[in-house]
Amino acid sequence: MVRPIVVGLDGSRESVCAADWAAREAARRGLPLRLVHAWEGMPKDAEPASLPELKVPQSRSRTILRNAVDRARARYPQVYLTAEPIRRPPVPALVAEAESAELLVLGSQGFGGLGGLLAGSVATAVVARARMPVVLVRAGFGAVDEHVPNGDGQTSAGTPHRPVALALDLTHDCDSLLGFAFEAARHRAAPLYAVYAWRRPHTHADTDEQGYVRGRRDAEWALDSVLDPWRDKYPEVTVHAEAEHTRPVHAVLRAAENAGLLVLGREMRRGSAGGHTGHVTRMAIQHVSCPVAVVAHD
Image 1: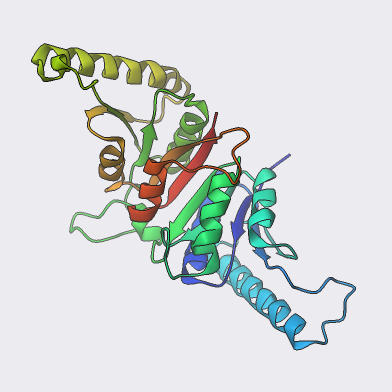
Image 2: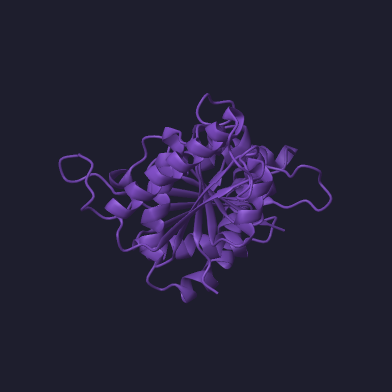
């Protein structure tokens, strides 16, 4: 069964940019696009919407979806799309939508932002619960921002795509992140920049130069060991790997500076109430300007 790319809309600038990004991704991958607007309190199909408190959310939902459909069809006529209002609270509705999606796309303004509902607390909660990949897109990120500047340093949609940046924590299983990142790079004909931040234990040997050299060699070997099978599987993807002796959040933020997409992991903790998003992922969502893909892993 072909899974669609699903976009959660709330009418904000962030969600409009998320829908544009999702439509471009659907065109790249040859997948259908599904637009949804979830809101508790909309009347059921058989329920007459005669009261103002029922008419307003229903009318707003139709307007949000209609505008998004018109925009997507005008810009990406090759993409098959559907749209549907969902009469459920946004968080459980979007988590459920993600289960049957190739990926879920939401607008993002970072944690604590003042943008649309889905760009704030709802997006945060969905990322912490969804088992399928979730991509967060900021307002103002457009098609030209996915490409490297031209010879004059100006943005252009005619230049190659920016790299896909991938942050790896080698203490966890990385297959789901690697598969997502290599596919994203392949569909863009873009290089993949994989980064692994390593730190030596704080011991007396920590200042020893030989210890540093040995630690760096081991980190590079570990990174290459993880990447080599995927290099063989995706020979068309150029891979740049770097093991940095730094804190993970610093390595991630640097890797994302010139990237068109950042891919990060989120550990699924069984039995954890309300889901979990790690510190590095939270910082990236808050500070990185390019779209951030959060991929759940064991």
